[in-house]
Amino acid sequence: MIAIAGSCIVWSLERFVRISCLFAATQFKIAVYHPDQSQYLTTGTDRKITYWDAVDASPIRIMEASASAEVNALDIAPDGERFVAAGGDKVVKVR
Image (cartoon, rainbow, N blue to C red):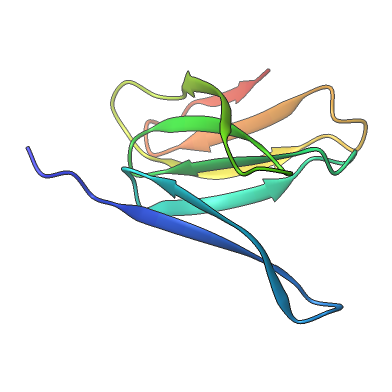
């Protein structure tokens, strides 16, 4: 088994500085910012959705998104209560 080490760098486009850096054994595909600015949601080749703390960039929660295919789309509702994920297995999940 080959472990892929991935990183996701979060930048401030107002100040042009790095805010944080996320590290996981995946190639990140999508990252979305929670509306209350406390968390990030990411997905990648590991077929998982991870909640990250926006302050210290530590993983808060990791969920299996698909058993058989990568997640290709991820978005969060404006109120932050739900998110939707869709992938190569042609299943759309709302949580």
